[in-house]
Length: 208
Image 1 (spheres, one colour):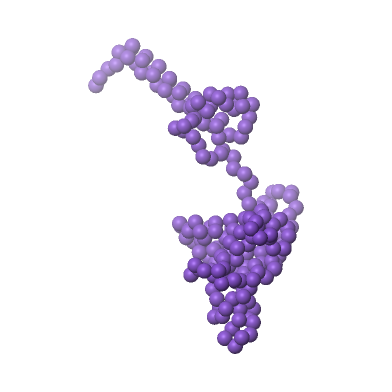
Image 2 (cartoon, rainbow, N blue to C red):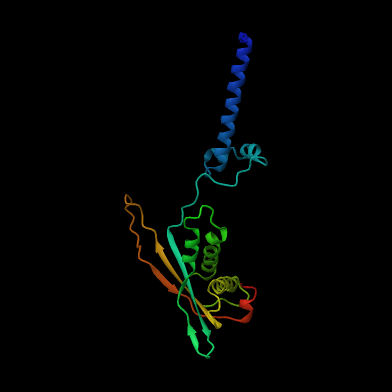
């Protein structure tokens, strides 16, 4: 068994302490980088950036924003002209329910099932606010409508006739606060129907 001399042991101890101090200092810098802005990170921002960039850049934050506190369910239905020439209004189809069914119990759910419809509705809300009227031609609002419309048409299909209109309905339900919270939240579902949107032949192009 090799016996280290006292000078060698001293060097090893000093090296170990120095390495540990460097690791702790590096982790401290990363902590300041991902933490919300504070007096220390503001004072030493230049030094922090010098250590972090470009090799150790972090694409996340220590404290995420508040999670979503509501459940949004989007349904859709169509009006079509049947073989007898009569206009038929279809039943409501749960688009969000389809996504939930695909995600539930799946250890690796599809990114589309998780985000496509949700992001499409977020896009619509961001361009329309609380109004139900159709957006102006050429605007981002019209693009949001077309996006939602094509998702609905792709999910529902033609129903055995020529689709002439599609309508969406959204039901928002607030998530109940934990039992220890004193916050008062209305957890009753609130539904809102959008107006019927005419369907043109080009709206169906490329859908399978």
